[in-house]
Image (cartoon, rainbow, N blue to C red; front, top):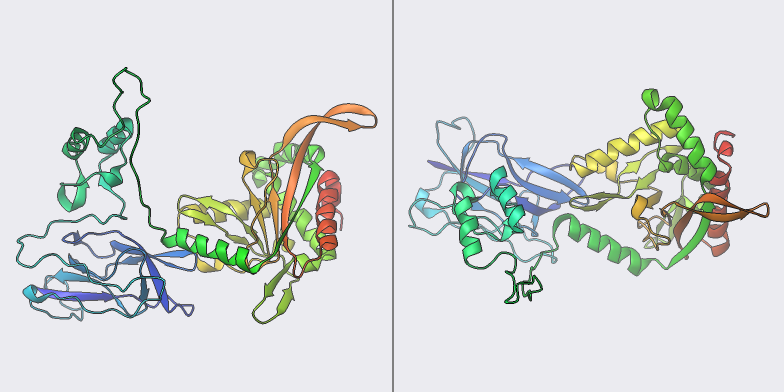
Length: 423
């Protein structure tokens, strides 16, 4: 038996340190070659770290939420020499596996430490970390859902930290499931549970970015109402005619086209402000960030060079990027470089919002929900599809008049959609 030390690899682009998001393995677990050991995060991109060898986990180099320098010790595996005879291994006696200091983390995280099993305790038993995803069969998961039980809270007794039906029975027997009916037979029983959730990984990055944006940028929000009846009719017509060949259009690709045209007159809104250097950079290219909700949190993939795309190309790129972000496959280049951002909650968009600017950009356009309601037109009350645009601007570099005129320009394009296709 020998010990193979896996260090945090250099994943390029000048990255000096990463944050450990979650372990995919537990102490004592046997891993195979190319099995994912952990997820780490750099900026907003999540990277999977695979195992180069076959072995058994004997030590974890840090805990989720901690920052690890490139080259720092990530994990130790005990391997059979026959399984990995050609690899360079760090030979240590099996009984002397001791913690080895890793590279100093940033001040945001506590000092890293190796997580090792107790010496002389016989066979290693798998320990599920508090922030690791629970392991259970589909039947156990289905039963837990029916009982209203969060699997993360259930102690596991199965192999490699797997939760069994017996674990669910024991959890229910301890009274840890949903509150039982009160004495009078009603369900209005008191609840006293608490759940502490560590803010790590993408959630930490989001929190830091939002805090930085609000601390640095004096936001100015401007809301305008738009009549989108005509552009919705055009969208329906285009989908009927071209959906089979070119794909379906939502409102966003058409709004992106309106932004491209409006930004030609208001380039101060298509910019990034380096407030440390005191420099505003205006861009000819229009790289539009699309705020996208994922299971892990909010991400902003970027449609690069929207000015060179037609609505169908924009729609296809939005769909591709959203799928990549939600599946955790988006790469760094797809999550950076935006010059202005769109945020939309679709049908949940509400009447008005106050979107937070994606620092260091200077503008963000928020799309609220479409409502059909009575409107006066030519002295007649008619039903029209109405929508608000809620947009925020960096008031240090974008004057209120310029912001208002930019939004009014967007409104004009959306209310007269034929102008979107006239240069």
